[in-house]
Image (cartoon, rainbow, N blue to C red; front, side):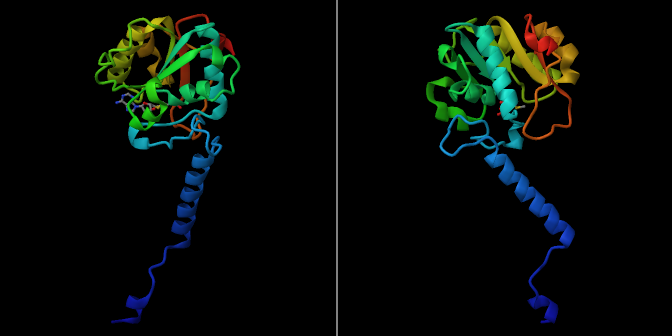
Length: 217
Ligand SMILES: C[S@@+](CC[C@H](N)C(=O)[O-])C[C@H]1O[C@@H](n2cnc3c(N)ncnc32)[C@H](O)[C@@H]1O
């Protein structure tokens, strides 16, 4: 056995620095916006990139929650499709008017089943396979953030949105989906810029089919 066989394997300074940065980022993302014990905090469920999960910043989740509360109206019903952060923000009890609306979250990730009856399992590949208790056109506003930037995904999510909505639609997706979004949901791009806890490489936007103040803010 040579001397080198006894040596503890070491990483180069460069690799160590990269690893440290990764751990720091992971810790930051876990602690972002999360107060221990607050099950509705944005980020309470850790992002899993294998499910294309990129959570909004706390500020954006709040702004979107304010928007859907305003548009749903008193006693309104809100559906958050593949957008758990907005559902969480609505339930956190920190946005004015959130006690005067009701909300559900349609999600593929069963970790959100912890929200009980508000959780509706949803796979965009089966756009109309929803729990029997979800009546058609029963939500005053539907907010959706499809997991993938493809026409195949958006067209299927659009089927779900049209099934759920009484009329108002707020779609959040990449700017490159503008023409597909217009074709399937007749929505218009807003100047409002949603932000995420991590920087996305794609330009991200909101789209609406009603006269929202997000169009020009
Ligand atoms: C781009 S993220 C949108 C999340 C949003 N930015 C938020 O902060 O709430 C896409 C969402 O789609 C969900 N998702 C992943 N696979 C899905 C599938 N097959 N059907 C429906 N939703 C899916 C993910 O769990 C994730 O919540």
